[in-house]
Image: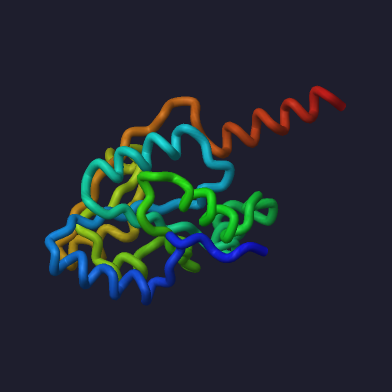
Length: 167
C-alpha cells in the first residue's frame, strides 16, 4: 500500500495545528461523513464548507463506525482510500479518521469555529448530538445546502438496479 496522503492526520497532530491556527486568527471549519463513493453532492458541500473559513478539516467515519451506522456491506472503500480521495480535493485542507458514530469527541478536542451539517438537520427534526459540545466552547453550527438527487444511497440503488437488469 502507498504512503498515507499528506492531508491525513491524527487527532493529536491536528490539535497541535489547531493551536497555531488560533494564534493566527484562522477560522477553522469542520465537516464530517462517511464519504463512500464520492459524488458531486459531496463536492458541492465541501466547497460550501470551505467558503466559510480559512481551514477545512474533514472528519471521516472509520470502517468500523461505518459498519455500525450503515450495515455489514459498508463501507465500499476502506477508510484509507476514502481519506486519500478526499485529500486529493483542493478545498480539503486536512482529513482525520474518527472511530465514533458521531464526531463529538473530535469536536471537543479540536474546537473548530464552525461545524457544518447538511441542511436536512436545519429544521430540528433530526437530532444533532454534537450540538452541546460545539456550543460549550462557543462554536457555531452551519447547515450546508443539499444537492437534490445526489446521494451515496441513491447511487448504490442505481448501481444495484443496473446490475439486476443485466441478470
